[in-house]
Amino acid sequence: MSDTPEGEIQTTVETEYVDVDGDGTVDAVRETTTHLVDVDGDGTVDIVQQTVTTVYDLTGDGEADLIESTTVTAVDVDGDGEFTEDEIEVEHVTLVSEEVIEEG
View 1 (cartoon, rainbow, N blue to C red):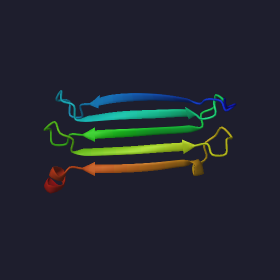
View 2: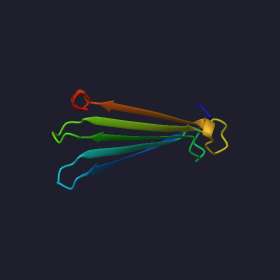
View 3: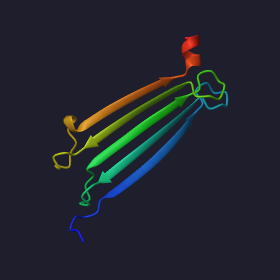
View 4: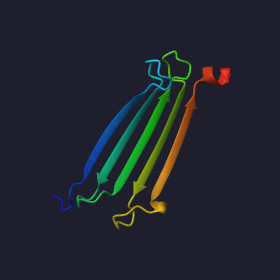
């Protein structure tokens, strides 16, 4: 058996449906996923990762036309219980359908 304490991972997912123009049809869906990780089991979060993904139906055909995703990851490398600027990474991805590009 190891004396290393077991960590804990907490995950939450929130989904929001948005009717931008008020016509009763969903125009965008936003999902926020958050992971909190206590690697060493000491009760302090060592890693935070949050991803916000938004899918837009710009043409009203029920198909995704634009997808944006931003992931922020913070890792408490020095173990001081705080996240400094050099311990945070941001990744942003945007995907656009060919149909929107052609109409653009």
